[in-house]
Image (cartoon, rainbow, N blue to C red; front, side):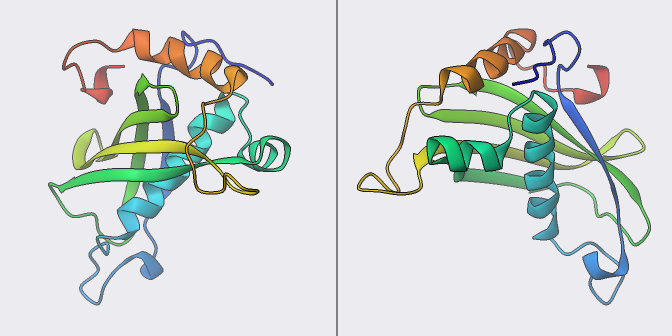
Length: 158
């Protein structure tokens, strides 16, 4: 596993351009697409830390699934906007992750996403049941939690 240190990668920033396919007839981003952007942001955070989802699925028979999600839509994104999806790890539990994700345009928060994931078995008799997060994955995620304490969720400052 290729690891970036937590000082190199406090949170992940994924650039996203809004295309016609992302919008409704009025040129506004369809609300469910923010969840797609968030999924990409989570995947890229893990990838930047050397955690490959496909390898985790094939080798460990594990995957992360969304257990709960709260989304606040503050401002709309529009056709051709250049956005950033900021993803931060808030907490790593035995079998769970708690993340904060924000979609920004020019430093202004458009969407806030509070999301909880669970690590689960994807095959065999334990399929669909929670599993402890593998040590090698935990070891690269836990240091990120130490960077953010309290209610300091302003990703534009990190």
